[in-house]
Length: 385
Image (cartoon, rainbow, N blue to C red):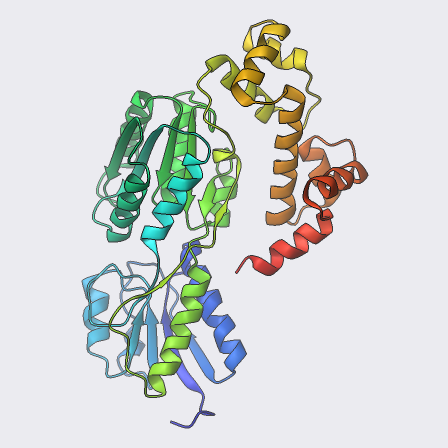
């Protein structure tokens, strides 16, 4: 095949999940850079069958999220290269995938850095990626005072109400404060809903981190869900590159090509240090829930039911800073999150973060980070892939 020939690549990658959409973005980025590929996308979900047109399709290769044996069997009948970007079904095809071990270790370190001593994992039965993430997370927390795991069935094997009740009971009986890793953002919403039903504050009593950074899911959850940027964009990019190399005569690799996670996007579900003092925990919860309003030492103390003097003393002993310093720290964190992960105006960022006006926001952010809000937003946009 001539290097200038347009290669025809079929994409069996679902768009229902953020991870799939990120893989497609990565593939598209690579093909735009090379300019020698035509993409044919079969829209659908993970569990849908291979489209009929693929059997007689005059193409060069397939990139697929192979979720079940039906899809695998259909792809094995093809006489063209196939690259798997899921790794659920064992097969002979080369695999490009996120590094589940590194993901579990990253979340463990995130929680250990925040002084948690109790840990838990919420996973999905029969999913090898969930199992790998849990094993790595558990190992990173090997010196924990307690560790708990809840593994529930795949969607459809139990009713949503049954799973919700199971979640509520599990969360109710966990020691507090507990740090929970959720195997993927899909399950994070249900976990946070269960916490609300049990009147368990997040992140003060239960801190939560998911995986995939699915923006729609993370931002509609309450509170917004912290999540690992697993590296799916890079998975797509590297899969497209691998297809190019195979079609140019290179032998497919025998070992999986693993992509390292790209950090954790920290949102409110894990923005907390482990707090053993229940009075201080109530005060921190009040501050978080009223961050956009005017907060005084008196108003925080009243919310906890103790005197201002006693609360100030217990707060400093527990948190290592004054209430005023803590409030400013939380406001800066919220402002940075809004600046770096949303497109809301800076005036609205200031209002939602509790700063008096946009100009004051700019002064505080510049002093804290060395960058203006505009510079932070531009930098975040350049590194999201």
